Amino acid sequence: MQSSDLVSSFAEIAREKGIDRDTLQLIVEDVFRAMIRKRYGSDEAFEIILNPDHGDIQVLHIREVVEKWNIEDPVTEISVEDAQKIDEDFDEGDEVAEELSFKDFGRRAVLTARQTFSQRIRDIEKDNIYDWYKDLVGEVVVGEVYQIRRREILVIHNKTELILPRNEQIYRDRYRKGDMVRAVIKEVLRDNAGNPLIIISRADPLFMERLFELEVPEIDEGIVEIKRIVREPGDRAKVAVVSYDDRVDPVGACVGMKG
Image (cartoon, rainbow, N blue to C red; front, side):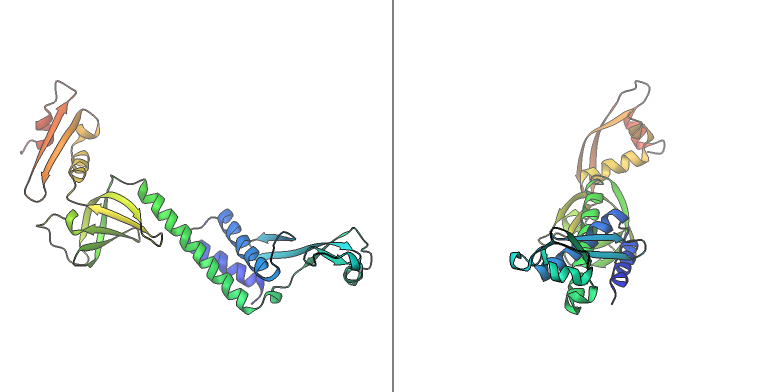
């Protein structure tokens, strides 16, 4: 595989995953630098020129021209004789920038590069999901039940798995695959592998508070405030409310005309 083909495949994956151009460029450069360090022990004498939009990449090996008997590090230095094989005008003290062929790294290095790139993309996806849902803690979401387990129900929301534990369910509720579920995002954690764990709840008092905010305009506008909620999920609840407008009855606003 040519280096341009590999970079193009990286760019295609990044587009599918919604990774921006700057992030892609940083990842690809890191991947190639890892390949260089694996082969040469250091990447300090190398420059990477990348255009991910066109799949173009150049890896330049930059060495100082020295006399053969003065070479201390063949990674950063090249003899006058070898430099003049590249261009006869090179002389001691010059810098030689030699483009590396992708074939020099070998097939195994290409496979490692693919694996490294895929892992970096997965890590970014995990971080993005974690950050997104961390900002949504306390908000109500609607998702689709896709798996029912003994201790929890898995719900899909925006292609992301949410967890509704048994102790966060209303005991009277019964679910089937494909049912739509509304719940509040209670907390966002990470497991030992760094995967985000988004916990949702239908039993938490905050869920009822958010529902009131959605259904009662006076609460949403700040005229009526919920001071406290006490629940026995599925059975009963008590809600303490206060009005900041003498013309508005807080209980009547919450209960509605039909009670």
